[in-house]
Image 1 (cartoon, rainbow, N blue to C red):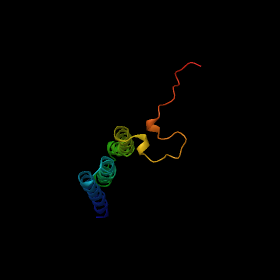
Image 2: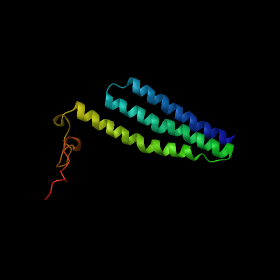
Image 3: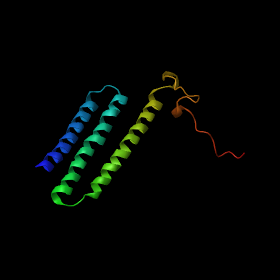
Image 4: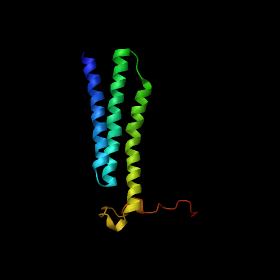
Length: 122
C-alpha cells in the first residue's frame, strides 16, 4: 500500500508539472518567459514520471530499470544547458548590447564579445 502511494505521488507530481509547464507555454507573453515553462516541465515533470516508474519496477517487479535512470540523468543535465543556449540565441537576435543592463564586469556581456584569437603566431 505504501509503495503504491509513493509511486502515485511521483507520477501525479510529474503530471502536474507537465500541465503547469504546458499552461505556462501557452499563457506567457515573451519568448524568454515561455522558455522557462517547458524546461521546468521537462525536467521536473518527466523526471517525476520516470522516478515513479523506476520505483515501480524496483519495488513491484523486483528489478532495477537502469535505462530509465540514464534517461532521467540525461534530461536533468541537458534541459538547463539547452535553455541556456536558447536564451543566448534570443538575446543575440532580439537585443542590442546597449539595451541590456551593465554586467558589472570589465568585459561586458560575453555573448556580444568576440572570443580572443589564440591561433595567431606570436
